[in-house]
Image 1 (cartoon, helix red, strand yellow):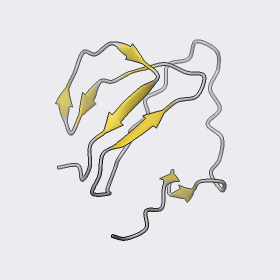
Image 2 (tube, rainbow, N blue to C red):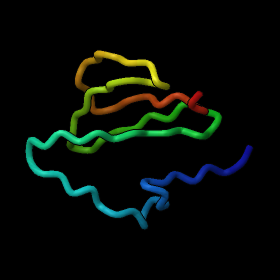
Image 3 (cartoon, helix red, strand yellow):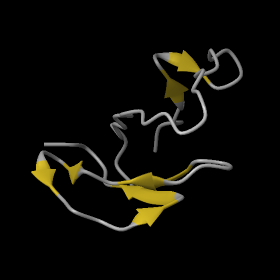
Length: 73
């Protein structure tokens, strides 16, 4: 199995740039998991609403963690 390298905005962890967000500002974040295994993503100190998974729209509850499926179609 290959080693996975996680990145944010194509920058590996530790070399990423902060995402500056104002209080009460809504931000759309797209997460892609190009690995072969599901990956839980957790937003420290934040909550989110999942709007869709793999192009399928959702009306989900607010949460702080989402399981991002492997290899989007």
